[in-house]
Length: 81
Image 1 (cartoon, one colour):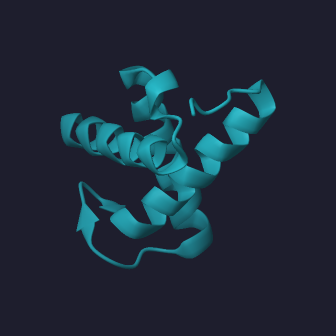
Image 2 (cartoon, rainbow, N blue to C red):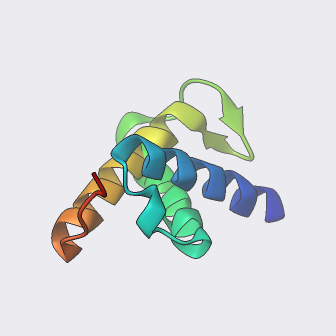
Image 3 (cartoon, rainbow, N blue to C red):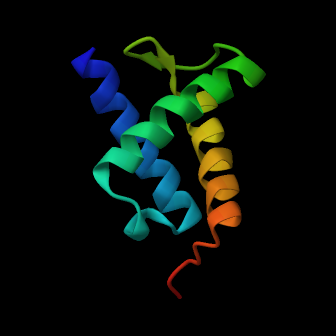
């Protein structure tokens, strides 16, 4: 359980860094983005690539990036430029 939260936070932080929206996300948002994005990514893309704490990392990161972009678009969060 703890490992899942840690890996979820890392995946969420990576997704925030890729989308340039990491500064506006707190650590709870990173964990939620990582866990929900992991479920979405693995559901759509399957379980392939390296795995950590039961999460396939590549599909999880892709799913988290998509989730962060969608949530940012819905709530109008803009990247700091």
